[in-house]
Length: 412
Ligand SMILES: Nc1nc2c(ncn2[C@@H]2O[C@H](COP(=O)(O)OP(=O)(O)OP(=O)(O)O)[C@@H](O)[C@H]2O)c(=O)[nH]1
Image (cartoon, rainbow, N blue to C red; front, side, top):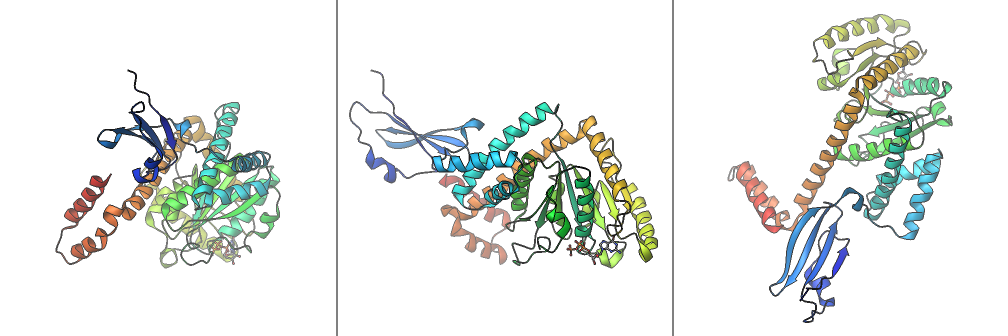
């Protein structure tokens, strides 16, 4: 006799047998029950098979990518459609609302955001195909210590670009906003002229306190800006933490803006970040500061010669500019477009973007896995005790880690 099977799909990561099973009455005719559970967080399916021994988890398999997006209610779908059509028509309010959606920590909103992003991504693919594979926007990262002149520079640079008919968006990654509630980069008094320009869009990007937070919300905001027709996306971060490394990993070109000062004044700048720079701009090269700016430029030129070459077609440049007078800004844009064209024709730009996508995915997995691990019932209560034992030298860190990992593995 053919065994009848019943296939159900639950949008749950895991479910308890007690919750769902009382509703099913097995008769002699239905002696095989298969429940498929779709786990949105981990994107794999689990089959639960009922047999005479009770419920048994049978198999876990990868779900095809197009099956991963959750089904939305009609209301939610209407929201996605409205935001999507407004976004690609270039409405700033829809872009702002879409970014707010991807920044949301609420699980339902996160799901709606993922559906929207999938739509925007497929729009990207179509547009890039029409554009012969050329990316929709030039992604530029800008970092520098407080007071280097970042906002003055963005105001001047952004205005120059909008006058040249570019659409510019500025995402200010602010590592201070999640910890202090304050805002280094997001305050509204910055870039007043540019923020009134209809071809510019400025947005502080909160970090949610983790590097993964920077990566996720900012990366997704970049995609949305590009979908909104912004062809230069500038990601600004203050160069005193870790966020600039995350930003360097999500842009095509990374620029370091420095004041004409050395030594103590630049203590906050991490050495490693200089190695990430494709262009170093020494700002404030005007008035009395021209001479120190020249000296600092020479110092950086010789220091950067010693750095490992990261590109076959580009050597990092050191330039002098003045965001206040505008001097050097146009030359700087020429150098930036040269970088863009060279890396695009050599294939480096596309290869870099692909690599960044992978890094982005693994960063998110790492962050989510750790969170999942720490809050898992099987290990949550054991952590403080084991940490205490490690602190007092009673247990080695390796053994404590093994014990926690074993408790976790045994429970899944
Ligand atoms: N002389 C001169 N001063 C400048 C120039 N660019 C900026 N400044 C001045 O430097 C100071 C800091 O400039 P901001 O643009 O606020 O610097 P920032 O890097 O955005 O600073 P934070 O907002 O603290 O991160 C201001 O007083 C500016 O007027 C420049 O090209 N030349």
